[in-house]
Image (cartoon, rainbow over all chains, first blue to last red; front, side, top):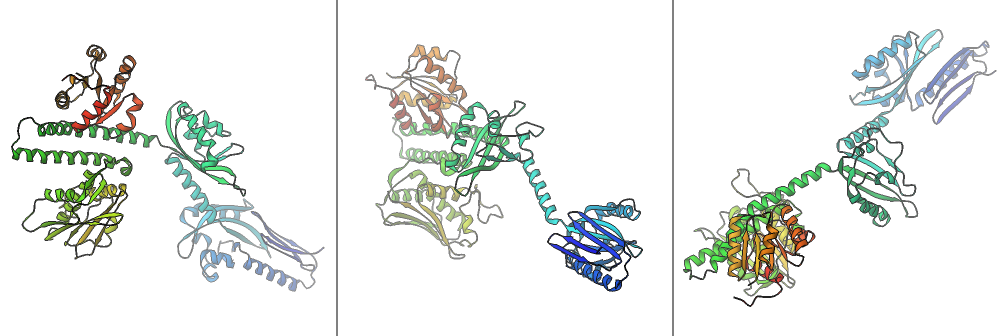
Length: 517
Length: 123
């Protein structure tokens, strides 16, 4: 009968037959089972040599294996560590040997680990296993799966410990846990619809969204049908039937929960195809959007009320002014000018109210245009005249006097007014603000040029953002910061461009272009 | 003379509406609320057109519009509204047209004229 020394490890199997060894040694790690069996044998032939060979082989294996291992004695002092453990913890062997493993354990794991050590050394259990966290030399943490067994060697008991690095697994578990919590608190579920079998694989809290405290045994496409309100069901079925064509789904439906309450759901997903390009499944998320729907309704209510409260007095004022303007009685030229000015003012207020209320919506979609063909120079002249010249500032206008354009004159006027107001506001020292109209082949260009402090390069990209206000740390400039944002929307909706050329200390040129139609 | 029944909640808006449309040559019956007998008023006045104040969500105006349409299917009804999206919803509620507030008085008259089938020859 031969003597056998075997170390088994995934990817590494070493087998040695020791015929004349008086100790039969078997150490094997298969899965989580680790066994070492030492057995006496009665043939003393070249025992010393064989023993040394076996010992050397064991040491080689111990050092080469990728599984972190250590050998301890009864006072728990580490006698020997392998290379894998040194690499795992970032120490040299000399730094670890002589210490105790609990010196490296994270505080929260020490009591339990210590208790298990006491039990195994008191021979109450044959081995112990635990998951614990160790500190590396750099104080970072590493999760390990620990297995310790005891074995006898020449009458002395030693502990053999394998420490499997499970940080990756732990990270995955934690990531899963985070995902589950995030999904739960955002009222979101993940769903995967098999387009062939119509079965649905789903995240743990999926069924709770549909009002089931306990997870249902199975879920199919049909299961959704009974939960979607009749008014939305045909649209949902239609969207599902078109999945292959559209490549996905994004639909808002009313959900009837198991207890009968009604919620709003947003069901989204993208199809995944097989190698032949056929859509085989839909993967996506289901969100409870009831809160969003309520907020949306409140916002609509607010806009509706604000609109009513602001526009009603403007309505009577505007109509009264128009009626006054058409008075059958002869108006003095003074009163006539005043009424004209008041009319212009009320028109501007009406537009501002619209713009403010629409700013809460998708502005570009909501902006309604009233396009006419008009003389751009005359409009610019009219706008310039609205600004009262000061002793130090002058507004000049240059360009083709018969330049006509097809656009919304009220709004183009607003853009010009805004750019000129900005020049006055932000370039107070500038002596001249010049408005230049250029007639290009496809576009006309309007420039408002000042000699003010200019704008730094970093701020230029932010200028056309909603609510951005340049250099207002002291709050010296009033306004909502909507000016350039609204201008940009007006110009883009006209399919034109808006921009600024500016250098710090050398003034700014705010310009926009409009296509000739 | 073409007759118009106008319901507008705000008294000052109602006054200018009445003045504008009277000066434009319409006979105007103006009221600031939708009374329980509003349909009877319409039956009695036999207007060529009705203007209703589509206030806030327009629930009241929509309800009355539908009642009028049931009883007087041919009578044009115009929604007068502050809502920015009135253009998207007036038809589905049965209105023939809409006028946005604040309105231009020329546009107001133009829209009303569009729905009165024949121009009155009377002064």
